[in-house]
Length: 99
Image 1: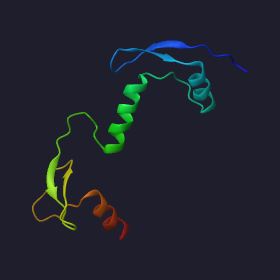
Image 2: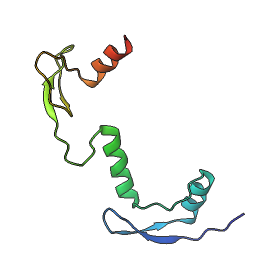
Image 3: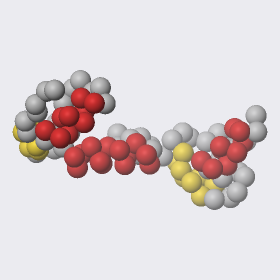
Image 4: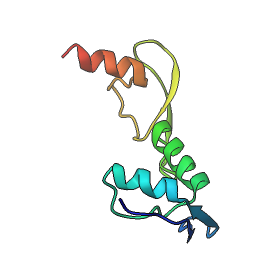
């Protein structure tokens, strides 16, 4: 069994130093990860949050629309076309599921 020691790494996002603990290294190895983390825990969490909310953080323009099915106001990452219905996330899933 390999012995791990705490390592100090530098975050590529914010430049802060953080400790990649021996326990984390063992967990990474068990999960089959071959690379060390590039981001500190705070930046990793922020990245997960952005992914789960669909906010890429890259300045993608969003357009405000009203859902054609439920009337809820929502945002979409494309410019709606005249005469084409636009749905919120929940209604889109319903429409797509009925096909």
